[in-house]
Image (cartoon, rainbow, N blue to C red; front, side, top):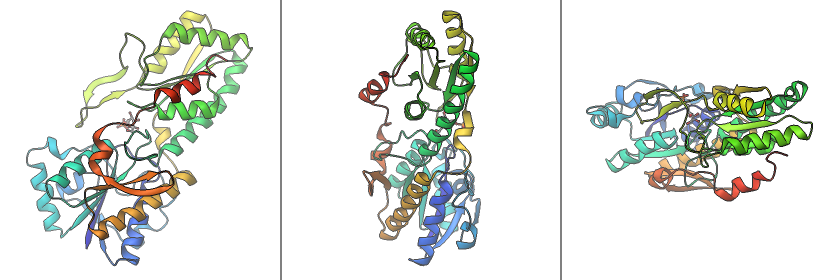
Length: 342
Ligand code: F6P
């Protein structure tokens, strides 16, 4: 078989580990051929490719980003997009695709499957918000980066008796904020799943100062105050209808400073959470996903996504993964609340 590989959406550490595993096993075990599509769905749409063989995947396991490039191209928003993809795949002799992506990339994969394109999906996103899989790769790396930042912020916050507000990624799901906040001993964690009361947050901040320690507030970029709305960078939407978020940390720091009379500063971790080398956990998960994805392609088991359930990698229908976002359940947030303000 001749198999195309693409990576779409926001990049994350571990993408190259998947590509490497797919190609290595696909060639050495099954004798397949590969073609790399550039920049997500833009590759098959425009027929832009790069060579993808054993030589091209040597040395990429620890490398962040993706050697194939990425984009948020949505072929369903382009006139004749699906037909272009089908004819490019036919011209290039591509029998099947491995699409590595999050809700948007895999949403496209799911629709294309219904239209007769042979696709197997691999779940990735630092947000960890895809249904049907316990974890996505990239998440563990992002959490570790954010945790390390929080560890560092504790010491400087205490030296200056300041509140430090750390804004982390997480558009609709607060998994990064929850895990990094718990691992880093944050004093308040705010998630998109639960609108927060800014007076209550100010109360936690004051209580923490009474212990002679300084508060660290972790806020997901998609978190909103009660009766407020998401703070956005601007109003532009990408081709999947997402607005660019950012700014809740600064807004909150200003509110907390005004309400508590104590200086408050903000740190926005932004794309640092998505860059650099993956953790061992993400390298292993990404590698196992890649090995299982090429098995699915080889079996002709299309329309599936590989998923982590417990410690097993299983195949689930692509629709199950993209039907609804996996958000933080209320009981997981309640667990963390024990530490708020203390
Ligand atoms: O979906 C992953 C993610 O990192 C989100 O957490 C974040 O809101 C978004 O991507 C940022 O995307 P971009 O890099 O396109 O600004």
